[in-house]
Image 1 (cartoon, rainbow over the protein chains, first blue to last red):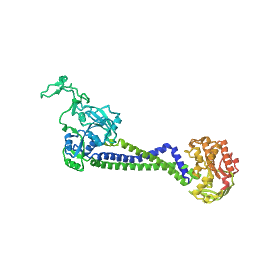
Image 2: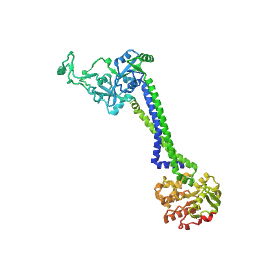
Image 3: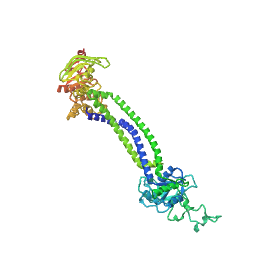
Image 4: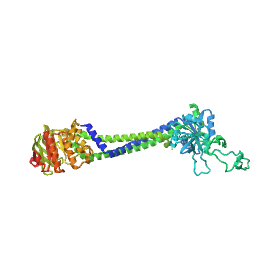
Length: 394
Length: 216
């Protein structure tokens, strides 16, 4: 038997029938890659979700779906109108048991969420400024690294908040915000968000606003008579759509700040005992829901794991079926080439050498399929790093 | 060099095959085997080179009792000592002329130094060297035939068996191919048994044997 001769013959057959070999290896590789890709993607999603959850001790928000609250607080899925008044956050903070970082997660700009928060959030998440400076005044905006790269934005530019409904004329008008800084990449949902001060997010919501000062003499023509002695402006009063050095003082809030909405708040207890007390205290609250993100996540991942098992099982069956089809293709191919093998036998090539040549062809195709499958797996790893969690959370 | 005694062969389906009481080919002798179609000329060639195993009798070739060898031994012996030219040339279409010529060496003991040069010389003599790196599938029938002849000679066999290798060739070229085979065999005292129906070629051989004369 001459193994090298047999392998050489097989290689020449495979390489001189490139298209067929590639199709066969490709088909086999793709079906083999799918279960691996699903596994990698799901594992990476689980890992990323778990890392974020573990790094967030407690979250508070409106009673209701714990999953929704967790996704709002950790992954910036819009909280819509499910909010709690800021005073409840202050209440938790005032207990002395924890530090509280409120989050306003409702609006977006260019498809990315606008997160209203406090400077403590950046410290808590370990986010640092890579370019420009941190938020210092109303209307300032700091970008996550990902969103800055994708949208081509940088300090010195500006973004407009998106209206919630295009046809709602009485709704919230877009606010132009100054981009003052870009955060260093963190590989978390923070990379894909716009960060503003909590007050700026209320400005976006229309709770605060800015307009011409009606007390000034030049605005007297825009003041309408009022029965209750208050000041009522006419439609000619200019509303500000941007906070500038000149008009900054013209912005003001109406009402009690303690009643202004936040959609979630991260609670950082001082110790384990404080955490236990807080969880116990708010467990039955009708105003507030408190949860450990990691607990909520484990329930979610449990369901996800079941689905993954089903999907991987189904894909493994598909791979098995494809493997059988490929085996059939080889069997038919060898049958069609019977004359060729008979010739080799007639010139004296041994059975072992012929068998080895056939097996080598199978191995070459299998190796090609393995390369394609592992390439697919590597693509899944790269995908997992970039878009996965965002896609998973939606 | 080739001695056949009391050879008896039946096909596996029981159909009567061939019986050759006695037949000899001398060293370096070139024999043309003639006979009507279906008489068993191809079967006799396959028996001589050990592709078929007879039910009785012996075949001896250059001191080797072929009929006493096992299947793997017959294959190994054939690969090293016998050159076969098939009726349909049986080239590997996905191999180049060079690769087809070197196939018996690559799948046998392995190509030795100088073997490629010998293959190239044969290709030159058979006028196929210009297609050296061309795939067999791209050759004409005549070119395929010449490559098949070169492949049968490349490993310097002691016995060459050819089954109507010149059937579809023009007169000049078929005579050239047969002359080359004869020359190669005679220069190395190798035997040549060629099945042919072509009367023009018969004078080139040392002996013409009709199958009907040697079978019982």
